[in-house]
Image (tube, rainbow, N blue to C red; front, side, top):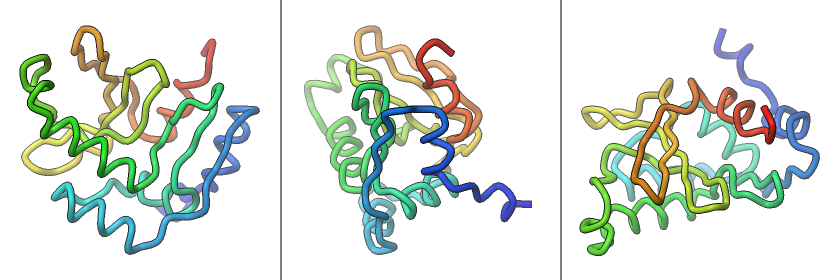
Length: 148
C-alpha cells in the first residue's frame, strides 16, 4: 500500500503549480542532520519528498517546503530566539517545514516527542494562531493552490 502512495512529488507539484521550482535531491546524510539537530524522525512523506527535491518553491516563489538545512535553521531559530519566547507560545510541539511567503508557516504537530504525520498546521505570525491545515503532505500541496 505504501509503495502505491510513493508518488513522484515533482510530478504532483508540477500538476498543481505552473511555476513550481525544485532543487537537487537531499542526501541521506542531510536528512540525518535534520533528525539529529531537532531530535526527531522525519515523517515518511516529507522524507520521500526531500529525497526527490531538497525544497520546493511555487506560487510566486513561496517556499512551500524548505531544504533540509533551512528546516534546521528555522526550527532552531523559533525554538531558541529569546524575543520569540516573549511574543509567542512555545514552538517545541511543531516541526516547521515551509511557508506561504507572507510570514505564515506550516508545520507537523509533535506530540509526546513523535511527529503526527496526519496533522499539518498553519501558524499565523501575527496572531500566533495554530490551526489544522491538512491531513498530510499531499493534502497540504492541494490546499496550497491559490483559489482552491
